[in-house]
Image 1: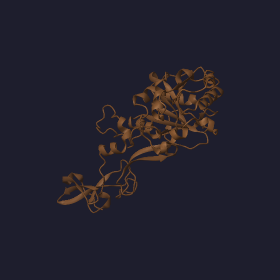
Image 2: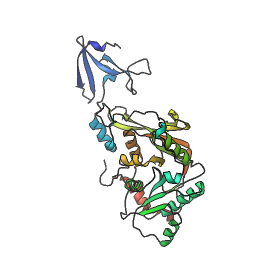
Image 3: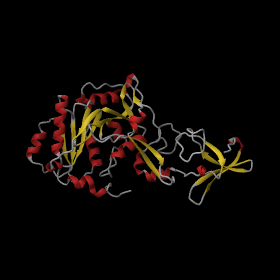
Image 4: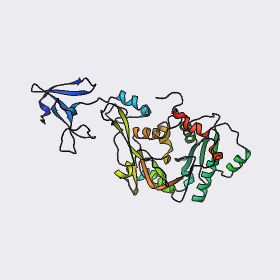
Amino acid sequence: MELVDCSDVTESFLTEDKDGMFYIQRIVKNEELCITPMSGRNDLNVTRSPCLEDPVGLTRCDKDASRILLMEEGFFQEDRKLLKMAVVPQNSSCDFKACGFNKREPVKLLPPHQVGRCTKLWECVTLAVKTTRRPHLILRLAESVRERLGFDLPIVAYDDGPNDYPDEIYQQIAEYPLLQYVVSKNEDLGIARGRNLAVMQVKTKYFFLLDDDIKFNEYTKLDKLVEILDTTDVTVASAAYSGGISFTAYFEFGHFNENKSKRRLGVYHKACTLVNQTIPNHPSCVRCDISSNAFLARTTEILDIGGWDPELMIVEHKDIFIRLKAAGMKVALCPDVKVKHARPSKISVKGEDYKEKRRRGGQRFDKYDY
């Protein structure tokens, strides 16, 4: 392999080969050379799979590694329409909406004058839950909060219509004065729109997003998540599921198939705890990109990015975290803070049409599918 001084380059241009790949040619002292990724991990040898921030060099154009696929903003937005709410940081020289998507800045402590301590949980935190005709589960959740904390927390539960529940249900709801149970006139809200409507009803500075089949247990240390939001620049502080499946991951956008022809969002499951980028003053908590649907969030900041995409009827999980990362907001995961994912076993608790609305035959969007 021969490297040359880039100051000797007198001309450069892009050339497309028969496979639709591009290579960047340079004319150096009448010899054609190509820009090629070099592995920073392997003594600067040519690599077909470069990492972020790996250097490039000029090599002979017959090197396979000199072939690249151009990734323009149009391609990025076409593949990831969920990034349509992405923003460019202020004073940034980048004009590409998602240019910082692969960056991961460390979590920082807030300056003392910005720290606002929450001393009473019920004044700072509201539980936000979307349910599909399963008021029994909302009542079960409210009961678990009272048993675990010794007091009630505000709860906003948004349900699909119609409002045909018996008086017995509303009598049970009345036993929890801080429970706001809203039944929509729309009989098929979808989970994303329902969550947005629930969060819009929140009056506290934080909300705790939960699925309706969640219960508090002895590991639900909500005050720890509050402490993180009170004292750091984290937007979302997430809990984990007790004995359940982990939904934690890192995101990265790039080429992940063998021929590098498809631009995709890479999801690295369980990478958060492996990388172990800890949160200041909370060594058991780590930086993450996506977590389970059991997280404490800043109400205003979630509303500022538009919340969940209302077109998503199901499979909304990645959407909110992609929006957060594209907007430069930070997510923390505390594996030692847990909630119990307790799926109901009785069919009567499932709710009318629950399975149909939950699965929808795989149809993800309200009006059309990308």
